[in-house]
Amino acid sequence: MLVSPVLQPWAKPGTEPLAFMNHGTHALGVARAAIDAAAEIMRTRKGWGDALLSSLPRMQTVIAEATAQVESARTYLYAVAEELRAEIEAGRMGSPTQRSRVRLAASHAMPSSVQAVDALHSALATSSIMSSSALERPFRDITTAAAHVMIGAMTFEAAGRVELGMEPQFPFF
Image 1: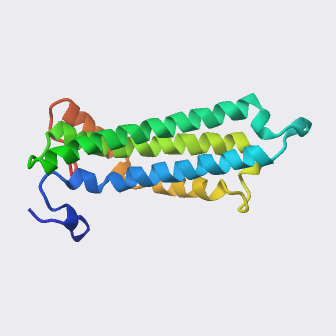
Image 2: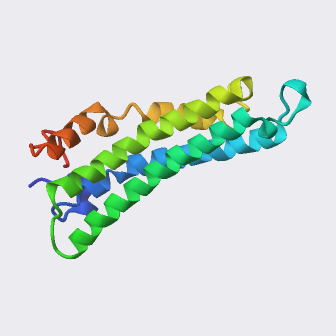
Image 3: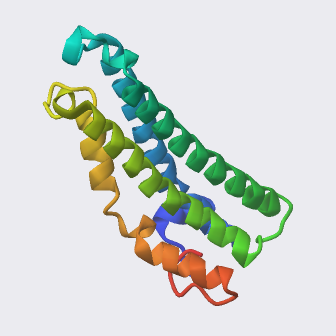
């Protein structure tokens, strides 16, 4: 088996999915930064009627929903990765389902993060579109990162095949 230089540290059989966690963890980190930036904007900016944005129920709702979305994806990613890591540490390769679910969780973290950041960006409207806004960079970064093939539709298709007892037909599963 040829091992990419990028994956060399993960040369043990079965560890390849763990190398792709970085796509999911990156997405979750960007989303967490967006939540923090949005919260700061909400605590300091005033909206219509001279009320702090943080006092508006719609802002409270969007920050809560974004947090739940990102934290749920984070919990899933780390839970399945830990399960596979424990198998590898015990000298086993992990089941195809365990390996697939790490890839699935990393891929799932991306749209969850994109949706959370997009909701915050949309809710904050013009407070988020200027290059001086702390939310503009995470919005741009997550939108760009979401285009990567290793967390795109093909990984969901491959994970679905594994869930159905089939071969993934996609690399590093």
